[in-house]
Length: 188
Image (cartoon, rainbow, N blue to C red; front, top):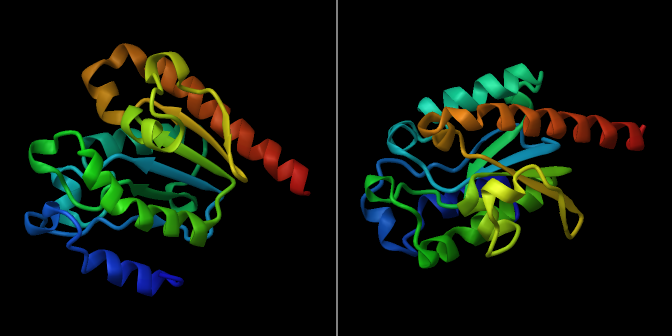
């Protein structure tokens, strides 16, 4: 899985867990393969399973609004999920399903080599930042994992259920934009 083509082919042929049997499409990822900013969600939903593209449903449209609000073009970022197949009824991913897909995500991170990784929601943060991550207390905080800066924000689907958190999300997205600008200045 050293190239995008071999990685995507391996992912589409994957049968490491039972989810492959019920998927419509493998939802590999989308966006710039040289992005400085990588968003990682937990798993595809129904619309994503139908289209094969992550974050295209209601939650994806809300994410697009936040990206627009902070002047980050969606085509300049890469968006992926831990799981590449939809869990039934959009239930939380099982640990063994996450384990089956993690090598694909690790390979995507290696190929993209982003400056910043943003976990969309608690499940992604619990997997990528720390197992006891608390999204309501720790969203917007920065962590270093190897050479990557990583943070977590509310999952857009959670904001659809609880709009009171939308302002906090905007603040977190503004901080992500500021961090990208800061990193660009350091490189200049």
